[in-house]
Amino acid sequence: MAQSRYGPRERMVFSAAQLIRRDGVAATGMRDVAALAGAPRGSLQHYFPGGKEQLVNEAVAWAGRYAGKRVARFVADLDQPTPSGLFAAMAAQWTDEYRVDGFAAGCPVAAATVDRASSGSSTREAAAGAFAAWRGPVAEALTGMGVPAARADPLATLMISTLEGAILIARAERDVHALDTAVRELGPLLDAAAGRS
Image (cartoon, rainbow, N blue to C red; front, side):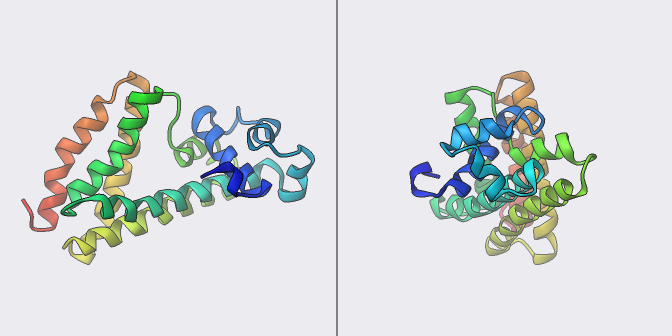
């Protein structure tokens, strides 16, 4: 997201997602969000009358939509789309980031889930909605690759949960080994579901 192309509200949602993925919800302050977005602090109350919870929920929803939109781009970039190729592309986004920028950031949806799911139903619902906004396009892509419709959603759930777990392990170990392992081990199962073993 090119910060200059968007208004202050959109920049604050994006900035909140970036801070949450790096620092978690508790450590992400409203002033930090405004500063990163280059927006006046007074605009926070104007755009987010529900305060930090509203901003966090909108950042989580944005992250889910962003992940969902990336699926089509990953598929378009594959010479011959396969379920294993899609999962490898999803994981490569993270291995590439970690190799270049280090292991400081993770998924903002996962961070919000860990930090806030037990304290407020609205954030839990926002996280569940974000995962659904990601899972739907993955399942649709799988169906387009020949995976039976009845298996597409469960496999999309498996792909996302495996990826999220591998991201956590990679950050803990400061190594992309878990992501590489997930791609190598899950790929054949995914392709078998599409009759491409």
